[in-house]
Amino acid sequence: MNLEGRIDIQLKTRGVAPATVAIQSSRPQLAQKLLGGRAPEEAAHLAGLIFSLCGKAQRVAAKAACEAASGVMPAAAVSRARETAVLLELAQEHAWRFLLDWPQQQGMPPDQAGQSRLRQSAADPTHFLETLDELLRTTLLGEAADVWLARGLAGFDAWRHAGATATARLFAGLGEGADIGISQAGPLPPLAILEDAEAHELARRALDEPAFCGQPLWRGAPAETGALARMREQPLLAAWIAQRGCGAGARLLARLLELTELPARLAECSAGILAGSIWVRAWPLSNNTGLAGVETARGLLFHVARLREGKVEQYRIVAPTEWNFHPAGPLCQALAGLAPGDGLDARARLVAQSLDPCVAFGIEVSEAR
Image 1 (cartoon, rainbow, N blue to C red):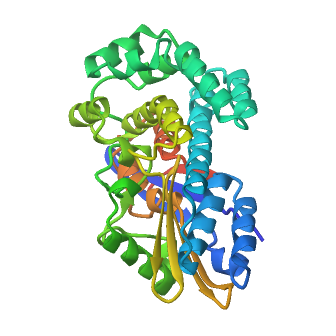
Image 2: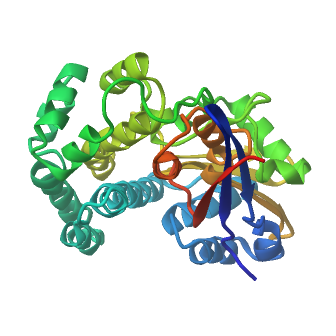
């Protein structure tokens, strides 16, 4: 059984007209098959093992969903530990993209040493904070995080064109003018502002409509989730979007901004301050049902559990990739707007990577007949 599946993307070009886009996912919906009939603790442990990426977030979501279904409220110390674990994992995922994946994709050498240092420090939140802060200052930004965060759009452009770090040079390579691969898909609300009634409706649809988990909709339309949805109000990102549009550059900038702010978020968790952005939430619903949402690097992850006699009767997962790679969603809209011509494959790959799929993907460009 293939637990991961893959995403295949086809672009068909016809002269100077925009390409037509087809996105096919073979990601299986296995939550019910794998977790149904199990005890809640067993289901939570298995969820963290099954999913190779964001395993901590998956485990936290499973525990929180089953607790909500049982009417259990976790202690403050437990909630704090879970938020810290989620933030540590999110930071590692973001850093991985800037230290390894994006440089390799753009033909630059990856920073294996920096990523290794972060991974080795993850067991100790204090050490991790120090390591991340140093990597931001010396490797990613080339200056103190608070100085970089204070830059407006003009200051950011000056930073990227000066090219003092590999990250700056990668952003400089995005060029000027309109962003690449602009999408008009609206954002999925982050957990911090998700209303209870909206959360209940998501859970209902996940349980009652099997196809919803594979191709979810927000208010009847595809939506985008991830750092871009969480950070849209940040002044620098808002200025980028207003001037250049909501494309691959905006998503990468949102991820770098979020990574740069994460040391402060982690310090809040360590100090027992859970104010600000909410990273883990749970809702007890009727009929021994619980919903949990966890913010991950790729976006909002939902788990829905219904229990009966102490065992999982129904289980559903709605993952970020299903929102962002919906056949008519953010990626489809972004790719449909790319100009045909040389380098279409590379541009399409950059756009797809900016949405950070959790499985392998392939892109095929061909001439329509």
